[in-house]
Length: 265
Image (cartoon, rainbow, N blue to C red; front, side):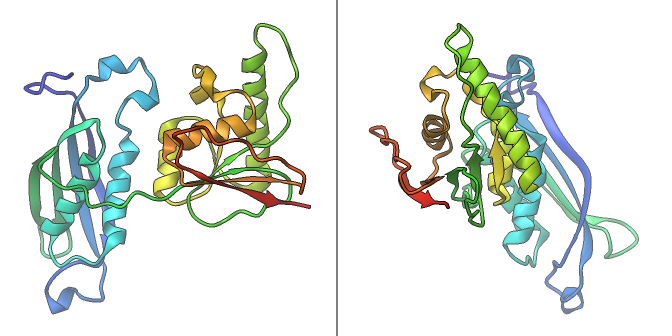
């Protein structure tokens, strides 16, 4: 736990975007420049992260909070926009406190705006988490729109040596990068990268080694990895693509996810 009198902080400075905002008639129908500055006090020290990206609050959380808030509605007040941004960031468990300033840059010779400070637990998180589905891929499988994590369905390497599982995972990583090139879709190796794609409601291909190597219960095949990942992401559905005789895996007890066979030629 960080020393909250002297917490570690991450920040976003001088982030300028254009959006329609304002209560005056002269502000309607026109975009104006807004400058965002966010500073987040962390619950844990950065020193405890071990240089692992998934152990820290990603800077992407800050930029995505701004983007999500702006996409949600048209605002009359920068105060309301700042509150929404604060709620988005404080929904993240690693954020303890946030300072948000939003400034209008086109209303006069200087900047006009607001600065707020909010603490975790005192602001409701108003954002709606994106529903995520998982697809165990096979050639010819259609891709549904929205947040879909694609697990490459390529056959893993056969090896019975002491490093068999790692080699199997690495072969799926290679399959993920090949599939990403074929489909023109980003590949994610970390939870941070997966979360970013999900929040943007974009498809992403998962290269599993980095997340699953130290989780033997995840297995080393596409089906077991998909079920394991569904539990970690809270996925609501998994499609297992393949020919008509492709068997569906058994869903483990306690995992609330629906599964279906997605038939391919």
